[in-house]
Image (tube, rainbow, N blue to C red; front, side, top):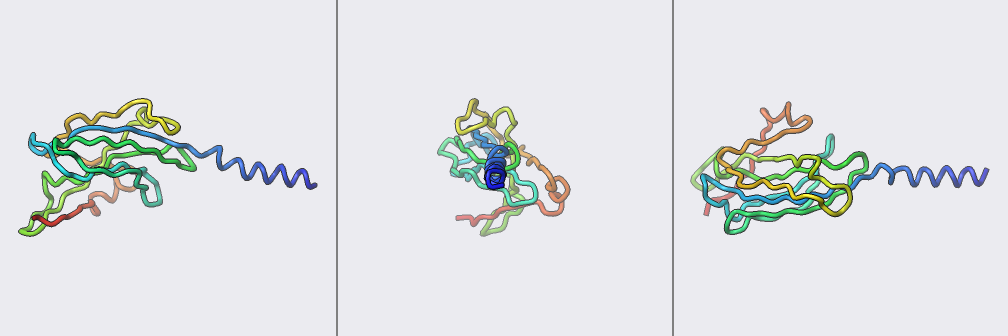
Length: 159
């Protein structure tokens, strides 16, 4: 009975690790606002979770030419991670006041073939020159239903 108990305990310990998947991606591109570089804009990589809050993987800001490069890895217990690029579109402001500006959030999901298994990316996902005046967000899961009612906006003060 003791050996059976040990074997059963070992299986219970090992099985969760069999379902764990690590995904890695490398993304680069340039943000433009009406053809001019979007300088100093926050840009992030996130992992999509269904039923739980999404997980931030890495964050950076665009350089003085609007370029960015993000690379990150994350593990998920159930499935290969679904990763997206997140930024706020202040180029086409949703709300503008004398002291602040609010932009719509934009998500661009990384195609699965650009999310490598393990900790080393195999390919670079290139967003090229992303014109913010034409950027539209992508939704997944319940966002498709709730986005019209609860569209996410971020605001910042104007200098």
